[in-house]
Length: 595
Image (cartoon, rainbow, N blue to C red; front, side):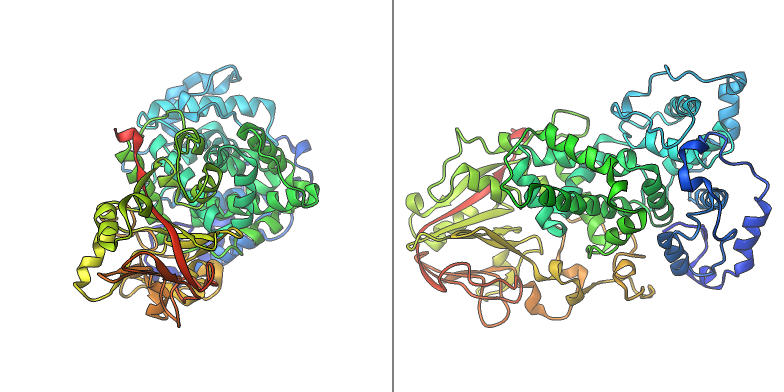
């Protein structure tokens, strides 16, 4: 990560003496900040207290200082830290600076800007948040953003730019300095890092990535959104605005403290924390009553209102504490997921803004037909799958009622499809199944020997008598694995907020298929039993291994099965342990947009 230590090597960071940082604080002490601030709106933030200089020599220590709000009570010190952080961003050789802005704006810089100047289309209609600025400062932000549009012609979609510009105006002495700071963030060229989405492809894939993360690490809140919103993807499309736009200034500036040090992943953490707090707010106010499904626009407005008013119930420190208590997978895996989602969108031809395809269109109740589940039940399953496949519609590949009870025919109909969804109805009326991330053809790599394959995106579930999903055990218990680091890279701290989520280098480009995310090869697993996802040979198919049983075992005649607790998914039996199959279906994911 880039930070106050700039381009320095790991060794240089370790030996950086405290006086170097202190000197920065003293030599910039005469700078005037807060020109654009309406101090009457700042409340306690207008008071200056706490440390007057930053004194640290370790990157790890600096991150902790940012998270703990070391400079949160001193507006001038915060401005000085921000300037040094932004100066240290590795940028393209030709990056517009303050002098460029002065040359372009000329004498107009001394005149009162007009707030009637429209913002560029690439901000997608997002306004400039007031953030305790003077009314004239909002107009200044308009002028800065329009100047940026002229200097960065490649930007096609950047809805977070108004919020970032407004925030940085707080800590700039004039428009020109704010322009330079924003330009450096946009021009960051550190490999594998980005600070702001600048294309629709990047933005849309980030929305899909957030949906995937919410699905895995914010399960209760995700269930609430699925139950109440007609289109979950539409609700999650607002995730960046919750953080960069809707949060009160007192909360957003604390997020900015950490974001400028640790980067983009902080936005994911904070947005997931906001979703958790929203769920707590709704379940408390509804008293546990059943939620009725509503138009997605109402849910979006409800979340926005909650985030804007969060200051009445959640302090900035409590928000950050919740954000960094979430046990996310490592940054390498998040980056792989982002790349995978981008690739999926590219393959579907989605690179510019267009109307979002929602879950209802993918699961049309008038055309969907299954002998095991109805459209509502399939939609519930759809809410669990990775979002890049929610752009597809279900395609029936195999059913025992049509193709017969033959394992060979099962393989012949399912090979070449990735991923697939397995549905089973037992003679007792129970319904269970599995989402399988990899092509069944991979089983051939082991010859006649039964060998496991697949990725951590696989999961098993049951629908009847009750609905429950069981994911890869490593997702729920990250302590069972550690991310594989490049040779010679330092170990990070043992605490969650600083373990595998930190200091990981740019991952290799994802392979040709669409499921590199959560591949077992990316982790040092404590036991191979935790990565037995799926297997098959001439006499059986297996989902989930390790321990004394399998999550699902199905024989060659596809009429008898067994289920029990396995290590990979740590699931209870999905139905009666020994069961007879009444009907089995396998579904693929059809990309209608590519047709």
